[in-house]
Image (cartoon, rainbow, N blue to C red; front, side, top):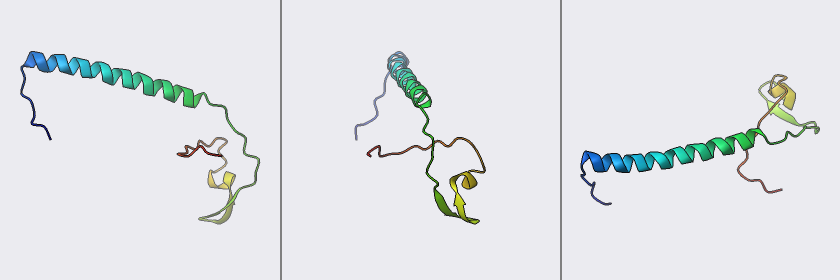
Length: 79
């Protein structure tokens, strides 16, 4: 681990402004990715999924109390 540098306020401010520009760029990129995710098309679920839920066997609609939309985020997009 490198020792912490001690600099003047002006040097710190200069470096902080540069870092802030990078942070803003990252935020804009994340916002754009989020916009693209929200714009993805939907998929109708036609298969009658059944689960063992708190009330016994329940359908997907039962588990989500009749809500019409469900968003699922996956780590693996294979297949």
